[in-house]
Image (cartoon, rainbow, N blue to C red; front, side):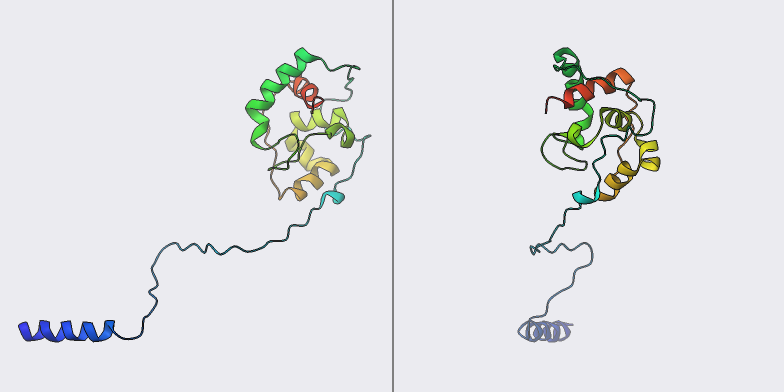
Length: 159
Protein backbone atom coordinates (compact mmCIF):
# COMPACT_ATOMS: atom_id res chain seq x y z
CA UNK A 1 0.00 0.00 0.00
CA UNK A 2 2.90 2.33 0.83
CA UNK A 3 4.45 1.57 -2.55
CA UNK A 4 1.21 2.51 -4.34
CA UNK A 5 1.01 5.79 -2.44
CA UNK A 6 4.68 6.54 -3.16
CA UNK A 7 4.17 5.90 -6.88
CA UNK A 8 1.09 8.13 -6.91
CA UNK A 9 2.94 10.90 -5.05
CA UNK A 10 5.89 10.76 -7.45
CA UNK A 11 3.51 10.73 -10.42
CA UNK A 12 1.69 13.74 -9.02
CA UNK A 13 4.96 15.64 -8.58
CA UNK A 14 6.03 14.88 -12.13
CA UNK A 15 2.67 16.01 -13.49
CA UNK A 16 2.73 19.24 -11.49
CA UNK A 17 6.19 20.13 -12.77
CA UNK A 18 5.05 19.88 -16.36
CA UNK A 19 3.40 22.47 -18.53
CA UNK A 20 0.92 24.67 -16.70
CA UNK A 21 -2.61 24.03 -17.90
CA UNK A 22 -5.52 26.41 -17.41
CA UNK A 23 -8.32 24.85 -15.45
CA UNK A 24 -11.86 25.40 -16.59
CA UNK A 25 -14.20 25.81 -13.69
CA UNK A 26 -17.85 25.07 -14.01
CA UNK A 27 -20.31 27.86 -13.37
CA UNK A 28 -20.49 31.55 -14.10
CA UNK A 29 -17.50 33.36 -15.57
CA UNK A 30 -17.25 37.11 -15.99
CA UNK A 31 -14.86 38.76 -18.38
CA UNK A 32 -13.82 42.15 -17.00
CA UNK A 33 -12.12 43.31 -20.19
CA UNK A 34 -13.39 46.76 -21.10
CA UNK A 35 -14.87 46.97 -24.56
CA UNK A 36 -15.66 50.21 -26.30
CA UNK A 37 -19.25 50.29 -27.43
CA UNK A 38 -20.35 52.92 -29.88
CA UNK A 39 -23.85 54.12 -29.08
CA UNK A 40 -25.75 55.86 -31.80
CA UNK A 41 -28.51 58.17 -30.74
CA UNK A 42 -31.72 57.89 -32.66
CA UNK A 43 -33.41 60.97 -31.25
CA UNK A 44 -33.86 62.33 -34.77
CA UNK A 45 -36.27 59.47 -35.47
CA UNK A 46 -38.81 60.68 -32.89
CA UNK A 47 -40.80 63.50 -34.43
CA UNK A 48 -41.66 66.74 -32.70
CA UNK A 49 -45.38 67.24 -33.16
CA UNK A 50 -46.97 69.93 -31.04
CA UNK A 51 -50.38 69.29 -32.62
CA UNK A 52 -50.50 65.66 -31.46
CA UNK A 53 -52.63 65.46 -28.31
CA UNK A 54 -52.13 61.73 -27.86
CA UNK A 55 -54.70 59.07 -27.12
CA UNK A 56 -56.70 59.31 -23.94
CA UNK A 57 -59.10 61.39 -21.90
CA UNK A 58 -57.20 64.69 -22.07
CA UNK A 59 -58.22 66.86 -25.00
CA UNK A 60 -57.32 70.30 -23.66
CA UNK A 61 -54.84 71.64 -21.12
CA UNK A 62 -54.36 75.32 -20.45
CA UNK A 63 -51.22 76.44 -18.68
CA UNK A 64 -51.30 79.78 -16.93
CA UNK A 65 -48.73 82.44 -17.73
CA UNK A 66 -47.07 81.74 -14.36
CA UNK A 67 -46.30 78.36 -12.85
CA UNK A 68 -48.77 77.42 -10.11
CA UNK A 69 -46.29 76.81 -7.27
CA UNK A 70 -48.76 74.92 -5.08
CA UNK A 71 -49.78 72.57 -7.88
CA UNK A 72 -46.14 72.13 -8.94
CA UNK A 73 -45.20 71.19 -5.35
CA UNK A 74 -47.84 68.45 -5.39
CA UNK A 75 -46.51 67.31 -8.75
CA UNK A 76 -42.96 67.25 -7.45
CA UNK A 77 -44.03 64.96 -4.62
CA UNK A 78 -45.63 62.53 -7.06
CA UNK A 79 -42.71 62.80 -9.51
CA UNK A 80 -40.17 62.15 -6.73
CA UNK A 81 -42.04 59.08 -5.57
CA UNK A 82 -42.75 57.49 -8.93
CA UNK A 83 -41.15 59.06 -11.98
CA UNK A 84 -37.51 59.42 -10.89
CA UNK A 85 -37.00 55.68 -11.24
CA UNK A 86 -36.99 56.17 -15.02
CA UNK A 87 -36.77 59.94 -15.69
CA UNK A 88 -34.59 62.86 -14.69
CA UNK A 89 -34.74 66.44 -15.84
CA UNK A 90 -31.55 66.54 -17.88
CA UNK A 91 -30.29 62.98 -18.38
CA UNK A 92 -31.64 60.02 -20.31
CA UNK A 93 -32.29 57.02 -18.14
CA UNK A 94 -34.74 54.26 -18.87
CA UNK A 95 -36.98 56.99 -20.24
CA UNK A 96 -36.31 60.38 -21.80
CA UNK A 97 -35.02 63.44 -19.98
CA UNK A 98 -37.98 65.69 -19.29
CA UNK A 99 -36.42 69.15 -19.38
CA UNK A 100 -38.00 71.02 -22.25
CA UNK A 101 -40.65 68.36 -22.81
CA UNK A 102 -43.18 71.06 -23.73
CA UNK A 103 -40.88 72.14 -26.58
CA UNK A 104 -41.34 68.65 -28.06
CA UNK A 105 -44.81 67.54 -26.93
CA UNK A 106 -48.13 69.17 -26.27
CA UNK A 107 -49.36 69.32 -22.66
CA UNK A 108 -52.28 67.07 -23.64
CA UNK A 109 -49.88 64.47 -25.06
CA UNK A 110 -47.81 64.52 -21.87
CA UNK A 111 -50.83 64.08 -19.64
CA UNK A 112 -52.27 61.32 -21.82
CA UNK A 113 -48.92 59.52 -21.66
CA UNK A 114 -48.90 59.84 -17.87
CA UNK A 115 -52.50 58.64 -17.56
CA UNK A 116 -52.70 56.15 -20.38
CA UNK A 117 -49.26 54.78 -21.37
CA UNK A 118 -50.56 51.35 -22.45
CA UNK A 119 -52.95 52.73 -25.04
CA UNK A 120 -50.54 55.46 -26.10
CA UNK A 121 -47.83 52.88 -26.87
CA UNK A 122 -50.30 50.88 -28.95
CA UNK A 123 -51.90 53.73 -30.88
CA UNK A 124 -49.80 56.92 -30.81
CA UNK A 125 -46.99 57.20 -33.41
CA UNK A 126 -44.75 59.31 -31.17
CA UNK A 127 -45.15 56.95 -28.22
CA UNK A 128 -44.33 54.03 -30.55
CA UNK A 129 -41.19 55.82 -31.77
CA UNK A 130 -40.11 56.57 -28.18
CA UNK A 131 -40.67 52.93 -27.23
CA UNK A 132 -38.36 51.89 -30.05
CA UNK A 133 -35.75 54.51 -29.16
CA UNK A 134 -35.70 53.42 -25.52
CA UNK A 135 -35.18 49.71 -26.22
CA UNK A 136 -38.83 48.74 -25.73
CA UNK A 137 -38.83 49.94 -22.12
CA UNK A 138 -42.53 50.29 -21.49
CA UNK A 139 -43.78 53.12 -19.31
CA UNK A 140 -45.88 51.54 -16.60
CA UNK A 141 -49.33 52.81 -15.81
CA UNK A 142 -49.12 54.34 -12.33
CA UNK A 143 -52.91 54.71 -12.12
CA UNK A 144 -52.75 58.41 -11.32
CA UNK A 145 -55.85 60.55 -11.22
CA UNK A 146 -56.26 63.40 -13.69
CA UNK A 147 -55.54 65.82 -10.83
CA UNK A 148 -52.28 64.04 -9.98
CA UNK A 149 -51.26 63.96 -13.63
CA UNK A 150 -52.04 67.67 -13.98
CA UNK A 151 -49.86 68.38 -10.94
CA UNK A 152 -46.97 66.40 -12.48
CA UNK A 153 -47.50 68.26 -15.76
CA UNK A 154 -47.24 71.56 -13.87
CA UNK A 155 -44.08 70.40 -12.10
CA UNK A 156 -42.47 69.51 -15.46
CA UNK A 157 -42.82 73.19 -16.39
CA UNK A 158 -40.27 74.02 -13.67
CA UNK A 159 -37.47 72.12 -15.45
